[in-house]
Image 1 (cartoon, rainbow, N blue to C red):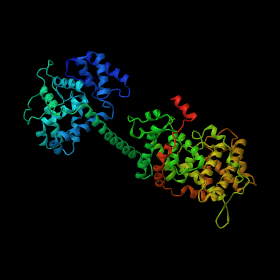
Image 2 (tube, rainbow, N blue to C red):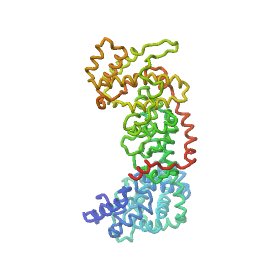
Image 3 (cartoon, rainbow, N blue to C red):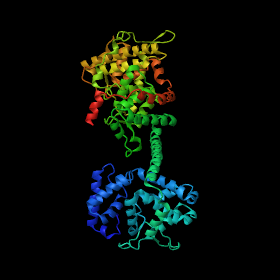
Image 4 (cartoon, rainbow, N blue to C red):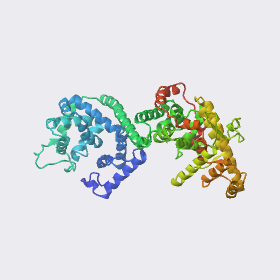
Amino acid sequence: MHRSLPEHPAFQSETGIAALRRVLTAYAHRNPKIGYCQSMNILTSVLLLYAKEEEAFWLLVSVCERMLPDYFNHRVIGAQVDQSVFEELIRERLPELAEHFKDLSTLASVSLSWFLTLFLSIMPLESAVNVVDCFFFDGIKAIFQLGLAVLEANAVELCSSKDDGHALMILSRFLDHVKNEESPLPPIGNQHAFFSDDMEPCPITEIADLIRDSYEKFGDHSVEQIEHMRYKHRIRVLQSHEETTKQNVLRVVIPDVSIVPEDLEELYDLFKKEHLISCYWEWNSAVVIQRHDPSRPYAEQYRIDSQQFTNLFKLVSPWMCGEHTQVLAERTFRLLDENMDRLIEFKAFVSCLDIMYNGEMNEKIKLLYRLHIPPALTENERDSQSPLKNSLLSTSRPLVIGKSNSEGIDYQKQLKQMLKDLAKEKDTKAEKELPKMSQQEFIQFCKTLYSMFHEDPEENELYQAIATVTTLLLQIGEVGQRSSSSGSDDFSEDFQTEASTSEQDQVFTDTLKISKNVPSPATGDWIVSFEQILASLLTEQSLVNFFEKSLELKPKLETAKLTQCNSKSSGASQPSRGEIEQLNVQ
């Protein structure tokens, strides 16, 4: 506040500053999306010199929302568009100057403050108010033609300038010496001027003469022509901003994933395109459009909801489960939606894909495990029909691993060693323990595995392997259930000291010991832990091969680019009951 025209007597007391504060606060309440932006204080200060507070407020509204659209936000898109238009006008009307400055962005950066403050911050106030008069009469056209007149008046010196700093000094000295002899205001110096003792005195330029020259030499462009040029350059500016956003998002994500940058870039394009397609095809497109917020950090500007995520999941995920894919995608979304705002960002999406494609087997199994416990798995899904009624799955099946030479190998020693290794690893890592899995959750876990193996070249072998593993885990869960019912410590001691204790039961006991510190459900419930599931899966080589095989993302991306739009054009999506309820909540 105290930097708004500090040289003017009206703003050297609390009375003027309080009036300025009230007008700016009122506008922030009217338009919270803009609130307050730099240079609004300078313009409002001048308006208060000539108008009452309410009149100054409505003049400010007119400037910010109609005459200078998109100027006053953190990206200043409107100002950048007009700078791009100004560059085109320089090439058209001042070709010699354009030839000297190969990169006109230098002049554009110098002239940015001309447009943002209507010359109020770089010209003596008694002269700048005349420019503001022309602006309210002719709109932005007056600023364009005055800017061209300033450059034309200094063209000879600018063409002989040595560098950007020299050009900036030439223009600053000229503008500081633009006077208004007819002004009733007392002369007020400009604090933004550049001076040098070894430079010759700059001649005085009368503001009336400068404005007259601007209208005579550069006033032939109509408002319609200016608006047409604005539309054309706005597209280019927005494309440049979108490219900057993408590069910044990729820069943040690349260090945290193993996906190659080229594939990451295509994933970002698919992610963004899914949002844009929904803006046109979805039944709630108005809500979808509002989710894009350029004021947020780069990585959070585009966010997608559950349906959009499901569409992308079906296009690029390697975990295809037939009809079960929809369910798996919805669970994945709930897992990634950590703040429960029903939206996820690109980084969360690509981090999940990175595990599916490039993660170690234990990382993939951990992700699958988390997809089958809350919050990913809902209460309703737990009650789904069990796939464990299949004849392949029985706790009475012999637990033997089959080799290609038909020799049977007792699995207990191998599994026991794996469990010991897991126990040692847990001692060295202070990771947060995963909750144990109930029987209903385990049923859904098995259902997903069966669906994933469908149409795999090794389908039969995988089914046989998962049947063996499931049988083992069912027995482990039953052992844990019995131990919880009778007291785990006493049961373990009895289990180890009984003469009839089998090697198989010893493995179960060791498995229970590994996860005994994990919070458990109510006493007597059937439960298994992540460590038990992982150790059991590791006993089957076909399962290990399935989860460790190399997966290529590139073919999925190529197919996705061809089918993403077609899936929408076949028919606009209809809202589900859940989506309608979510919309009503919002």
